[in-house]
Length: 67
Image 1 (cartoon, rainbow, N blue to C red):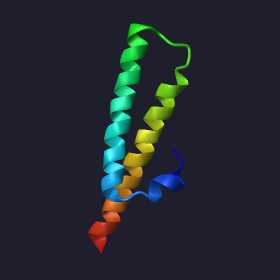
Image 2: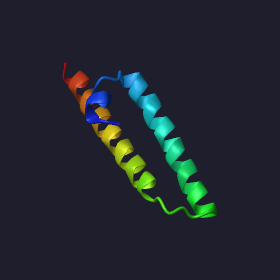
Image 3: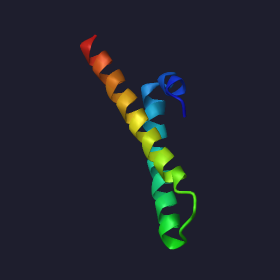
Image 4: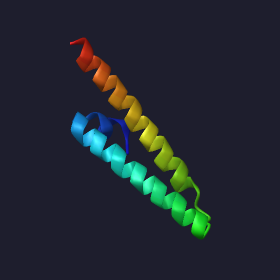
């Protein structure tokens, strides 16, 4: 997910999306531990997307707190 797309989400949608991505990451890790896959880049991409969303969520929350 691109940063521009993340910025367009509302705070509630962003929180829901983060939880969904965390669940998907956990499922991907579990599947990998059961039957190792060759494509580990999906785990890396998911972690980065979650981190990106959490960063933008934090920035949005601090902007609202200052207003």
